[in-house]
Image (cartoon, rainbow, N blue to C red):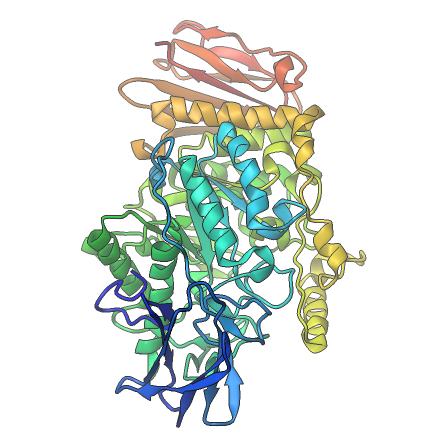
Amino acid sequence: MYVSLLQSVIPVGAIPTADSVLFTAWGPFLEDCKVHIYEPEDLVIPMEKDKAGYWHAFFKGSYKSKTVTYKYLINEKEEYPDPASRYQPFGVHERSAVVHFDERSIQDTLEPRPILADYVIYELHVGTFTPQGTFEAIIPRLPELKQLGVNCIEIMPVAQFPGKRNWGYDGVYPFAVQNSYGGPWGLRKLVDSCHQLGMAVILDVVYNHLGPEGNYLSKFGPYFTSKYKTPWGEAINFDDAFCDAVRNYFIYNALFWFSEYDIDALRLDAVHAIYDESAYPFLEELADRTTEYCNKFQKTHFLIIESDRNDPRFIYPKSVGGYALHAQWCDDFHHALHAYVTGENKGYYADFGSLEQLAKAFQQGYVIDGCYSSFRKRRHGRKPLQANRTQLIVFSQNHDQVGNRFMGERLSTLVGFEELKIIAALTLLSGFVVLLFMGEEYGEKNPFYYFVDHGDPALLKAVREGRKREFQAFHGGREGYDPTTEEAWQKCILQWDLRNTGKHGVLWKLYKECLGLRKQLQSLKPSSNSSPKVYFDEKTKLFSFLFENSMEKVVGITNFDSEQRTFFLEKGTGPLEKILDLAEERWHGPGSLSPIRLSEESLSFAINPKNFVLYRSPD
């Protein structure tokens, strides 16, 4: 599968076969290219160039039990690592290594992996999820995550980046697994461990830019174009001259994660920064090739995007002019909930802050759907008329919404315990696909800073000054932190043991309870694709939703106010039985004011201040 994934895709990099290694590098303008083998013996192998600008060479011999490291010698004068390196054991500037996996023994799984519609996603950063910061250190925590109700982990980018500390979005070798995390074998073991538990794995990949340090792609060919500018410099060349090989490089990368690591889904970072005006956009081609791959090998893989365009055509089927990508992160749900609860109104939160917007988010995900955006000073977005709730992934926190704050504050340090409980219930019971950011399930207090570990002092200085400028309007003269220090990274490591103590333990149990209800109640499953009826009152700060199908009714009522309120249900809603009340003592509440049962005749009732109550129709 390494060599012949699809006839339409050209493999690149060092590809092991039965008794040799095939090296392939794209360099259309190179006058000469050779492979310089360092291990297991020092030799230089000439490469031959084909009409498409690809250089090829074979290294023959028994290599499986030996380490093979190499660089490409180009134009007889400069050596660089492989642009499609599978492993950089000594860092971004040093030799590449051939990766060979022994054949995996087939093991029975406890249960089949979930499909996208049933995902409960747990986003984690390998370097801060555990003190060890490795793939293998994650594995012992998987059973507890599964007991919590999580059935899918999402791993922030692992493509090789400079140093040992980084979010992963500065990766410069899209095929190479970060050496300090445990390299290719560590990732393979983690993915296998997840699958043995019936858990899926999403990998975050970055196709909109590469990091600045160790990025040697331009030495080989026109991987970038000056036709567009991005926040990170020149754009990746998806539609300019010679773009076919660049598109091939990234499409092959996606299929590589599916074929070599059995990754279930990819999360494509910031696709709004993928600039492509071609008639057949890269993202559409990527979706087509993924479908073709899945059909050929009888497998199931998904493509999930992050985009700030609020354009549902990314996830619409091709029959209505869409790209047929499978799902997207829904930032508007987060913004609506966060802005209302915290009262924050700066930056993109300027477009949010009312219950009316929260109601709109509950009904369709998008809030800015072609209406005027005060943040952008123009109309923005498009109504998601044909989007399915299984295609929208919602969250109350993620790495961006925490880490891109001035001080990396989590919600647990911005709002009180009662608000944290409400936020959890509203997000997990929203009827969308949900994502948790590591630590939120027990109210982690440590921040999640932005951090880097570049080897270039000039880059470190640029990061420090850039972050300071970016947040100048937010910090109000407060002293920030230095994202280039090891201390910044250390402060972000989770305090995992908190999940068993005090209010942290209560919050953990609440997440487990809500995820259990989500699984139990048919109308809350995203696959039901039913938008709720919503009610809100800006004055009394009451908000409710009603999910209904032929089997059940589920009503959630939130009192955001600090005063007791009376809620009136519409006639025809009852009878109902209470199944969750955050004011109860087991959730560290003061004791509930709301009745256990509601008859058709008694549909008005009291609800505690800052409380959420969930009712359902009786069996």
